[in-house]
Image (cartoon, helix red, strand yellow):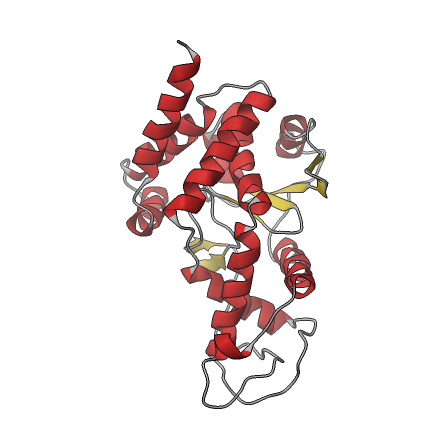
Length: 262
């Protein structure tokens, strides 16, 4: 099967998944000024506008390389119902879509794009899907996604130190977007970032008047899936191998919900 590299992984950063996109052995031409003899990351500066443009280009590339569920499909209607009450958050307009892939996953980009995988929709209830979306929104609001995009771009640049070519970020080519996707493979959120996004999701569920246990249940389902065996389980186990705190995070969120019942 071909490989799919995602922007921000559901609840746990980014990793390689077996799915529908072929990245190939692509090399990125950063089109940035790289000073000879210095570390590439230290030689490149990116503005917020550069990062926003990259995010928009990236999500367009992802939508092109994945089959997107039609708005009038069963999945599309379900997602529209789940997200009907929050077309924007803190002034940022959100846009949602479902990728018709079997992986249990979701991700967000800093431009407000949130993408859900069909496998996650099938595994989780509406409340749990909403909680996952709240978690991803938390990463956007806290600017985790912006920093992840910047770091991935710099890692791509660092692979191809070739002298100064330009002082500003240019529109990325298809090859460069592929290489940028590959660079996201190593991206991780810190425990602090994950806890903060979890807390955002918890509060988001309360605001939307849905099950306060939804985020804890979503994490628990991922843990349980990882113990079932098979290909899906191995993918979840791969995620847990670099992000082993999912059980602790689920317990922490359950404790928060329990306190509401007292």
